Amino acid sequence: MDNLDYEKMTDGELVTDYLAGQEEILPIIINRHLKPVYRFVFGLVLDESVAEDITQDVFIKVWKKIKSYNQEYNFKTWIFSIARNTVIDYWRKKKDIIFSKFDNAEGDNIILDTLADNSPDAYEAFAIAEEITDLKDILQELPPLYREVLVLRYISDLSIEEISVILKRPIETVKSQHRRGLMHLKELLLRKQEDK
Image 1 (cartoon, rainbow, N blue to C red):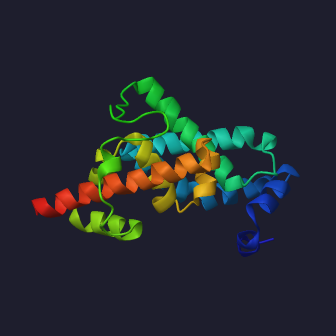
Image 2: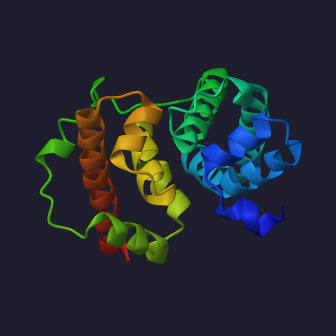
């Protein structure tokens, strides 16, 4: 079977064949998910070399844990869950996460709840962010709670349901954090535009 045939296979089919002894499939699985995982990790840590190291750790964990992967679950969300947990492990070691003093465990933010939502939609907001400044600078200003949800949604292109699985949060909580994250992003963008 050549690479073109493998590209047509689903993740589940590739994993099944890999577990059946076709070890040449592992690089195909890794290549399929390498860039999206790196973009997600980078969107959280905002440092290229750290993101590269964490991404490497993610795929070492994938290689070690793939035999325990339960095929009832979406493989993409399984990998992103590993990526998220690896980032959390990195943050725990660094102990330098600063959460907004206005956030509670559900992601509610008293200040953001009062902002009007009359600015561009999410995809427009990200496009504007890239025009105004490096997206990294904007993401760095977002509280980690919201950055995580927005990076998964708009950079990794995952659904709210997939994000809920990865973050192990109820869908309604993710929706709320998504909405508040967009409000916060839009407020940042409006400030940047005014500063121009």
